[in-house]
Image (cartoon, rainbow, N blue to C red; front, side, top):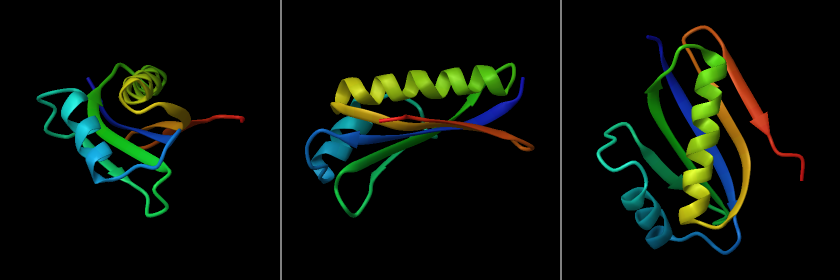
Amino acid sequence: MPTFTVYVALRAATAVDDATVDAVAAGLRRGDEELRVWREPDRAVLRASTECDADDLDAALGLAHALGEQVQELCPGDVLEAAALGDEDSQVWRAWL
């Protein structure tokens, strides 16, 4: 089964500080050694990515959407982008806000 990188960007409802990043990382996908959570310098956008197995790119994008929902539960805001990246192709969903 192919492996994909899935990624989300969330514009938080409030400023994101290091404590928020740590709380999201601790509550999100425990045991996932590939998980990375970080914030942008402007403190409004929280990002997360990980690796996952999926049948194809469409399925991987579905997993990216699910990751976005999980992040949103831990840090209220709007998911701006969800993406799935494979070795040869990628798909990106962007919110129309």
